Length: 84
Image (cartoon, rainbow, N blue to C red):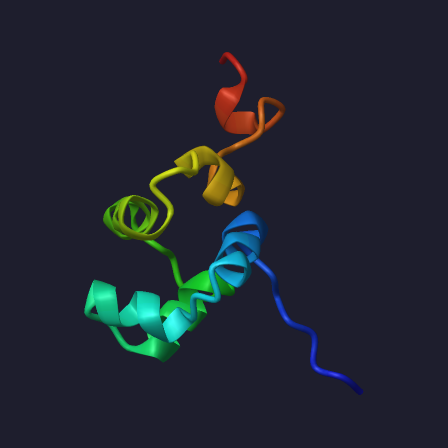
């Protein structure tokens, strides 16, 4: 059976591919291990706001952070956004 890849941050990954930017390069900039960032990009560990802002500012200044990390933004239909 083939191993399934959990794709999180689909837009970020598309933009990384366009720029031929690796997870290792971004991890080095953030000062964390490549595997740690890989876990964050696959949804196995949480990514923090500081990391998302630093990635967007350094590598994708022309892109909207909401576009790059759309999976972190609750939809309008989510329970958090409904009045009590």
